Image 1 (cartoon, one colour):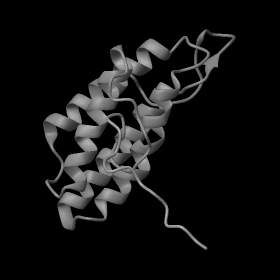
Image 2: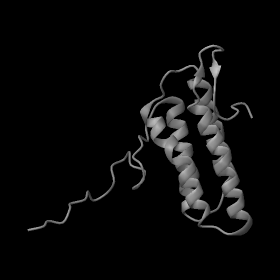
Image 3: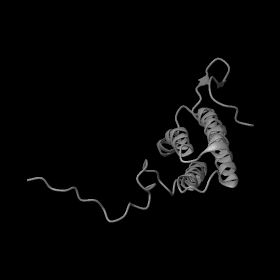
Image 4: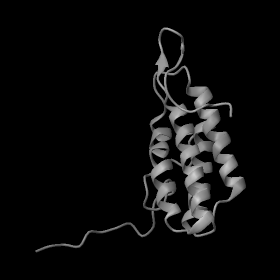
Length: 138
């Protein structure tokens, strides 16, 4: 006899609604980055287009993470969980749009990809800097 799976009535408070689970109450810059990402992504998925304020908030949050994590050997797992979605989700959302709006969203996806790269850039042990990733101060 096969039983249908039982699903909770509603997603837990830390769920991003079926996407990767992220902790909505993460502290500090990680929490800000996650909230900025979810706000940006939710607006795109809802068909409201590229929100300039949400986009700028996410860019600032990613730069802050990149700066704070520049000398770290590891980053918080909850932060990495959000980072892995940024490019593929933004690229997929661009497919919901046409023409110039789709082009703007893809441009944003590539810029965000560079900022995510800066967040996880490896340090150059000989120079103390990073070896890969986007420019943090732009």
